[in-house]
Length: 522
Image (tube, rainbow, N blue to C red; front, side, top):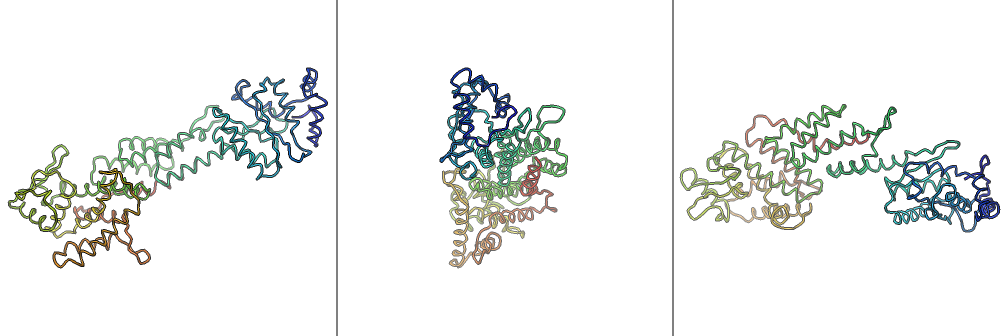
């Protein structure tokens, strides 16, 4: 506030009291009101009131003034009282919509101002929960006040908080971009963290909720649009989440939209599109994708889902061997409308399978009946492991069953979770403990068993060489590395001449870095 054409007197408290009590008689009569209205103008506030979001009927004006203890010559308490009256009489703002808040501390002390504004703005936020926008003027006040008001306002009101500045002799106030930029920076940090964790669905929600922060406008029109990099980011998040949940149809649609908007990364997105096209209807590549998906879930801390993926991987590997390769058990397995059953009679070739299972496994009564037959049994994980082990012993190839049997040590843990029959939660520590217990048990069984140790030896070697690794002299399991080894052994086992030209790590490993680049460009 200032007199027209006259700069404010430096002794604010003394001059303010003089104007308030003597010259304008505390606005008690019409003459004093007219005199003040003719001589004084609200050079900053009047410009803010012109914003389209401001309505005198349902908006509130809060004036922060200094009234220090002890009194200070530059206190603005009396100027605040004068401004309050001018807002009522000149701007038609109801007195009930104006509030004066006194600052009793040193306004030049940043620590004091941070504490003051934090408490004051939180109270304002509670009392005005339905507010749509909060304007804060950073023109008046000390640097400490303006800094504290900016930081606390952003913290408390977030994207509702907007700051304005009134340059000297300017006809309009300027809305500052610092507020939007600071909020945008924090939002980008949140999104970047979610991307690093592989939580693309949550990243997409944060992006959607804050889309207005990324809008741009051209010089030719006031219409605001979202930049191409935003569109690429949005559709890549949809692609990534869809691929994680094996919704390849939706992933393909989203990656097409990425290619529509992307200029710099077309080769990369074309490769991601090619991968999804290959995955659709290709069981072998889906197994590779399943393995990488399981590793992602483990590293992201989703241990129950990880166990579910591990046993789906186990089933998929076994079923590919039993149903799609030319090994000897295929003739005993039938697939009718997705229900896979096993029928083995105790005659000819079937006799050798039955005898092998009974001689090498315990508690086989649930599989083999009193006639020494496997009669129309649904192919479950127990039967899968029996049959793969039989195949291993009847061929000179690598023993895939030894690697698969190691995965089954997690079955009791999986069975107690919501992924199967229980409600138990799972941690990485529990998974590691279960593997270590099984490792120690097979080692102990091998030492105490005098005959038929061949199978135990081979499976102990898999534990020792493929699953366990030495960490500071202690054997610790590396389950993710082990899944990679099982995949490699599986590819070798089914005798594919060339390893499939498919690199899911391009998605699971490289995508976060690519998205980080796009996010930084926004």
